[in-house]
Picture 1: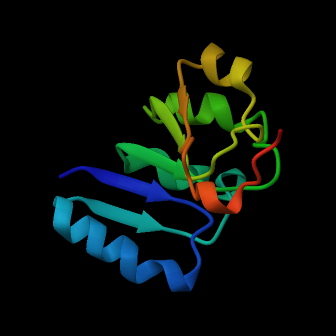
Picture 2: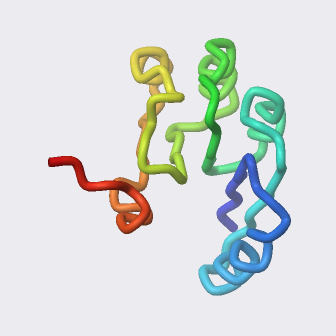
Length: 109
């Protein structure tokens, strides 16, 4: 069974996460911690989904690689908290949600 770690998860997000996991037959482990403080939890997961407002600690990238993680998926529209060069150097693909909540992002002329 696919097992995914989601970081920076709030209590009010848990019902939707549980419903998604059940619907898709996957296991989702959640933590309120940032990936910087939860990298040890990636040792036995197939995927990683983060949401954080601060830069990912540079020491995290080689640890993710060592744990077999291949991708960092952000549940944000931006991805400036991820050092793309460090991710690439560690064989990590970075993806985001480019159309996330388009009504809450102002259109600039």
